[in-house]
Length: 178
Image (tube, rainbow, N blue to C red; front, side, top):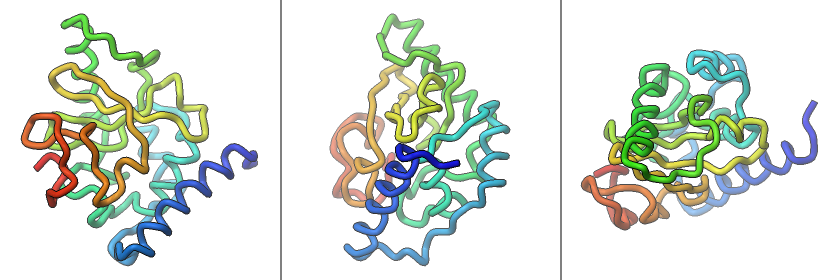
């Protein structure tokens, strides 16, 4: 059963995608995943639920993300338990360095994408029940920031995503994590 909050999250993701397609993004370059594939992907990471917004992103482009997040490991075929373990090392690094990150349940996180083996986009385990949760960007340096799906639109990558191993605006570049 889909509640109003789930429906609003799905509509928001669909709206972002439709806006980007209207702006010239080629929708035929992406391939969505089924709910069964999404559930298996989450289970492989040891996670029991996928937020409605993340599920909708994967329904749209979970098998093939096209040019949305080029240069990243993304989708139900690529992000697995090993990538999740690597993302966990970023949180460990933050903890070891005494860097406050604000995540409440990093052990239960869901990894959505990985870029260059040094940056990961995740949902905190404590936020998995939220229809449209904040997304966290974990850096191998231990730095942790938050972002949104809209910040990750093609052509709108912000300073929250690293470029050349440093945090700066990549919007003029062709690849995430150049």
